[in-house]
Length: 209
Image (cartoon, rainbow, N blue to C red; front, side):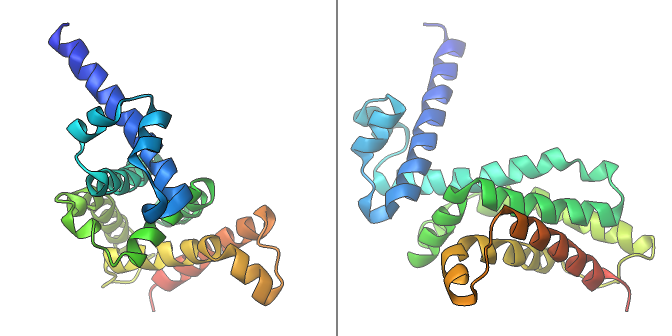
């Protein structure tokens, strides 16, 4: 078999494994997940999974890394360079909320890793690099907005993203308890309104004092 075809097959196999692993770990959790189930769902032999990734811990870490890669790669499609600074911030808030809503497995993977004390995420060698594009772009948006007189100076891009992620993450990750405790719907209409309020909240926070 030609080398290029072998590489394509290997890449396709890894992609299938990661997709199946994300579903398995986000459905039954780390403790309940089985490599056998991942192999069956991916249509790939269990020994081949061990060849590509290693043991269950390694498969979980690879799936967790993939979760971050997917959100960061999707953010690149927002084309911040072509947006006005305020609109870029609103776009990021809207995207973040939509990603959490449409990919519940992402929320579950993060919750699982935090319950495990961040054991796997600390061992992913390029985790900071994966986030670097977002941090750099957010820094550029802030600098542009400051130059235009629309944003105040001294905003740290990482702290800003933590804030954005927080206001988007909380209602999605706690939907069931919030519904019960506060008797609110948290349906699509509510989340749509929340997204608009969150974007306005962030933009007002960034305005010059």
